[in-house]
Length: 446
Image (tube, rainbow, N blue to C red):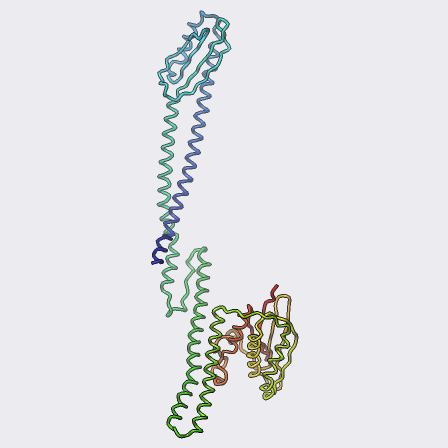
């Protein structure tokens, strides 16, 4: 139930982009429309103020020609002539005792919007300055401004709608490469692990995604191949001792009275059971390491001393092969001593098995400001480069014949690598000119 809800909540990327584009377009157009409206309104105010100033100058000029009260009739006639047809302008002159000297017809209602200016003219009648009122009817400008506002608003809405529709079409066209990748991804399954996404026709923004997805497929294929090989190796490793146990048991059951034979078979079976137990325990250990288990931390003051202990354990087997040991260098390390002994023991066993007779196996301990390295080197056959990268895989053997499969089940180096990871380090190998070096590298805590 949670997955459909999550899909419904997330929604379509194309729809979301279209809505965002429409919203941004609407906001942008509204901002532009608002600016146009404000500029137009400011221009109207400025024009109205200039018109009143011009009319004020004319009235002052006509009043300046009045020399006596008898000239008022002439003044009225001039004012009527000049303001004839200016139905949007009201002119009123007041003299002594608030007597109206002149007032033209102004049919505008009191509810109409007006703009006015009142002042005292520089003309006196009966030693009283003439007061002038100029009132401009701005109804036409207000209607024009209202129409402009409606026009801009409707244009912004229609423009954003058209942009959103066009944006939706463009977004769908822009997401076509993504749908192509989805179709390619749908064609991938376990039977086509070698197939990769074709990013040659993809836009530059999707190229990193294609490369990273193909890299993920490469890692998945490697893990899948390793798992397949692991399953085959596990079956091979467990099949041999199980077949031995079954065969020997059947033989004993056919000779029920041979007590000595029973004992020999039981001892042989016990060895095989121990070997099976070792394989199972090693696999469980590797499983815990793969799940991210961490090693306990204890300070080992001398890795050389710990190495000498492990060397003493392998000295008897080395003497039979004519191989010697030497430990060079020393360092202290925060680690699990038991796991460190086990890793070093596996490396020494591997080196002893492949070392040339009469040569020395060298355990070298080195320290730099950033890391500590513990290596085991031996003289022997050079390991081909194509095998070196897989030597730490489970059950991997460079020799496909598995000549030593009975004694060694191929988990030793995998356990070494797991122990290195549990300590936050890594295992590595190098082989040049007959010198084979396996080692552990640990970062130094700062």
